[in-house]
Structure formats: structure tokens, C-alpha cells
Length: 163
Ligand code: PNS
Image (tube, rainbow, N blue to C red; front, side, top):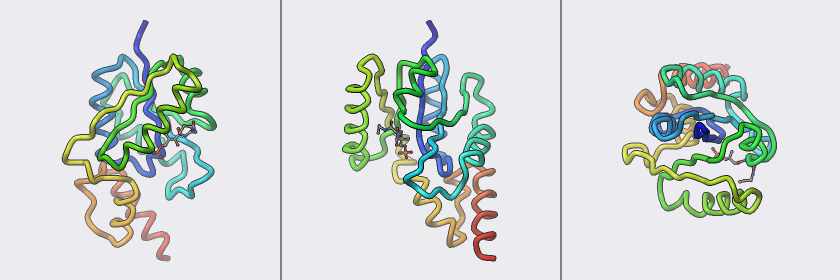
């Protein structure tokens, strides 16, 4: 049976830190599903369609990675994809509390699904979508933090918002 894992997130937008986790976990699992959440609690900068498109272009060189989006409970989506593992990246101790809570509730909802944590590469330990948006808003250079397509999209988004 092939090992299928889901890497869920907001990906608003995808960063090089996310790509590091995707690339490394694609070596561990036979098939990876990167799943963008339709999150009604947060007002995103990019629509789900834009986020999926940027992710698809950024991971197009990885044969065993699929990009999708989901609504509702993560555990239901993981079951629907016939996956048994959730992948999450850990950057720093500050991520730990939320991640432990999420992994615990997900295990309670379905004990057959495991959460697999991967430590982010040190060079990305400070990196988040929020920090990228914060600096891109002030036209700082984010070329070493995100894929080129995201850098362009951020530039377009913030120059549009200024008009
Ligand atoms: O990139 P993020 O915003 O840290 O990702 C959070 C995500 C999408 C993994 C989490 O919010 C999630 O799983 N949401 C779906 C609703 C759900 O299942 N909640 C219970 C587990 S936290």
C-alpha cells in the first residue's frame, strides 16, 4: 500500500520554508497532498485559487506531489484522500503548543491517523507567510524567502492595493 501524507496549511502565500518541508517529505512518503485550507476565520491576502496556482507552479518538478484545497475538518479530508499521515513543519518552540494541541485533537478524532513533524531547515526557522507579507508590503526584497512567482504576485497585490 503506498504511503500517502497530507501537508495542510493556509499557504498565504507559500514560502521557501514550506517548500523545504514539501521537498523533504516527498522523499519520505510515496505520495504527498499539499492541501490549502478555505479558512473563513482569516481574511487572506490571496484567494484559494491563487494560492493553489502558486503552489502548483512551485512544486511542478516533484512528481509525487499533488496540490489541492479543502473545507471543513482536516481529519475528514485526510480520510477522503485515503491518507494516514498529516505532515507539519516545526520552526521553533513557539510552534509547539499549537501543534501539540492540533495533533492531540486530530488523534482523538481518528487514532489511525498520525501527525508527522519535520523540523524546518535552520535557515527558515524565522520565516512565515505573515512575516513575508509584512515586509513585502513595504516593498522590501523577499526574493530569498519565496519562489519567484510569489515574489511577483506579492508585488502586484501590494501595488494594486496602493491604487
Ligand atoms: O498554515 P496554518 O494556518 O498554520 O494551518 C492550520 C491548519 C490548516 C492545519 C488548521 O487550521 C486545520 O487543520 N484546519 C482545519 C480545521 C480542523 O480540522 N481543525 C482541527 C485541527 S486544528
